[in-house]
Image (tube, rainbow, N blue to C red; front, side):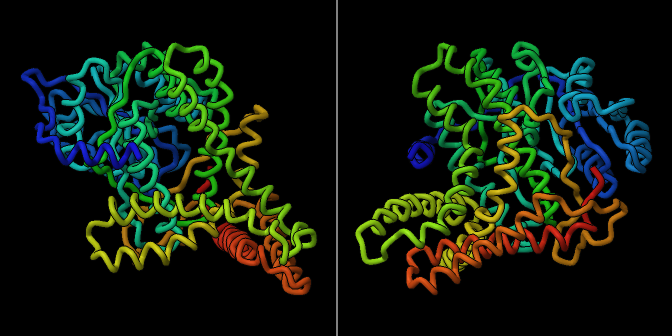
Length: 467
């Protein structure tokens, strides 16, 4: 609702976007990476093409790599330093604090009044800084976050599914939160921080796997604001294989739970409004939904033997269909209306109703994996920051199969996903034999979701980058 209101106001507002007023501030660009052999050259080349005065630009390459990536970083830094760029390589002797630790150490030496951060899979457009820095004319702004684009969205169904979800977050969610005056989040990359806000909020901390969410909330609790620019697109490479996607999901889900556990007491003691506190709580606890999806699926199989298909009990399930309609509307607006402008109306509608059921099924299939991550976060179990491998995939002709990184062994979680696929197949067969097909569609979605996740988790084992 807030998202739609924002766009109605935006259509009526003819105010020009902010511009740099006179003095051009110094900006530090930080590029945290770890074993990014396939994309390090692409990243540094892209950053050095930013349309910003070279004497006002500092570039910090934060490379904690333990492989040949470091040699590429050294060569690129030397190449651009010879061209007059203020660029340096910061290599730590250990990975203490992982990404948060690297950012904390580099920020202490940063020259810039503002700090732009890009992960290794991002390729910001040349005018990125000229489009974002003017928004800091408002002295209350701590962060300017931009929308993620997808350079390899059409590579496979897996990348299409991820884009479908991310488009919701970077349109309806982020823009709606800003319009409703709720707390937003910095997404870890493709954004710019005011250096003073980082210091005022307490700096980068490594006690969660989502250091970006943590710091952005702490800054807002100190009175700072976040500006979200939906119109500024920062293209990035989506994970093209299942193991990489699952490592990213684990980090996001576990980190979200850790941040909720850490910050919810502070939020409820803070002076922000009750509605803001309530919305922030729902936001931080959002990953918990996978626990309910997983439990609902597990208990639905024995339920088919207790529901009389001729009784009114079945009609109680209509409530869930109403909820699903709302979800469909949100995804439709975020994708068809806001993100697929290059497609005709009929093509975008057909694409949406083809992809959404598949997305729904795969999301159900990830519920066990993500539930494990959420529980680990709430229970305080420590784990390392596992990188999401990138393979420089930009088109369908590119491949992640020829990788220098060794594969990993099949995990216990993956084995359980295979067993859950069989469990829901049993649910389908049991429904047919008992004559109760009221949950048949639900069990089909769960079976297909878990089967697909299990199949590609095993198939892509040898393509997973070393963590």
